[in-house]
Length: 137
Image (cartoon, rainbow, N blue to C red; front, top):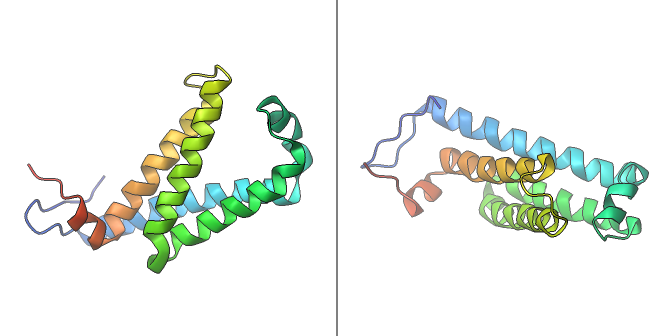
C-alpha cells in the first residue's frame, strides 16, 4: 500500500486513509452482494446451503445477519463492532468449509481475504485502531 505509517505517532498519510476507506468499501460491497443474494435470490444458493448442512429456508435470515454486519462495519461509530461481527461471520464460514473437507477452497480463501481486508481497512481509516495495535519497527 501507499500508506506511510509512522511508528511513533500512529499517523497515516491521506492516501493511507483513502486506501483504508477503499478496502472497507470493497468489503462492504462484497457483503452487501452476499446479503442481497440471500435476501432476494435464495434459490440461487439453495444447493450450496443444502450441501453445507443449512436448510435453504435460512437464506433470508443469513442475509439479514450479513446486512447488519455490513452496515455496522461501514458506519464509523460502529465500525469496530461491525469488524468483530464480520470477521466472526467469516470465521464461521471458514469453519464450515473445513468441516466439508474444502481446505483452501475459493470460498474459504475469499472469506480469509475479506476478513484481513476488513481489519486492514479499519486500521488505515481509524486512528483508535492504530493506537490499540501499533506496528513498530
